[in-house]
Amino acid sequence: MRYVRFLQGIGLSIVFTLGTLGVFSQPGWAQPSELRVVINADATPNFWQLIAETEALMTARVTQLFATDPTATGVVIEILAERNGAIVPLMLTRVSRNGWQADAQIASWTEYFDTAQVLLSYTMPASSDADTVPQSAIVLEERRQQQIQLQDALD
Image (cartoon, rainbow, N blue to C red; front, side, top):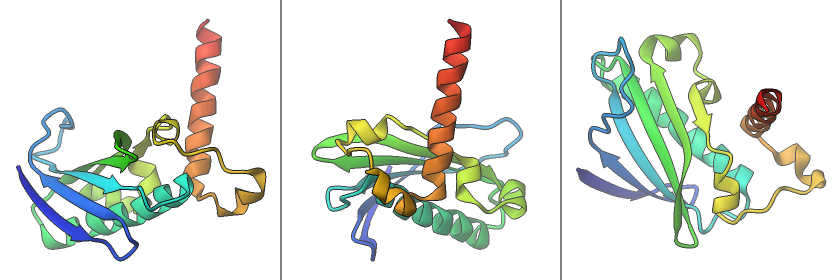
């Protein structure tokens, strides 16, 4: 694996790991481009800010990949966040070229790991911060509530 390091203008240190992850293969995809991104979130004080910045980065990367590689049929991006020495999964995006052309909203193709907020030692936003919470955070909370309801129904 090769590592390419650069500093993103939003103040996040990012390490790209290019290689084959294997476990993320999708049926029907020839060979999706796979990317693992480790984000240093020590300087990001708010979890939802981290989510919003990461989504913007992911949107740019997916758009760039499909624009520069006409043979890419899909992409898988695994995002890990590092904060206070802990490295945890933050999100996983799987999207085909056709899917991205039909819906270029990163949240539509992303699985969010809601335990990351706790594992990265972020606290829940105060109710007065509700206006600053991105749409993806609302989707994440709705999915968490659905999982709880499903688990309750199964018990």
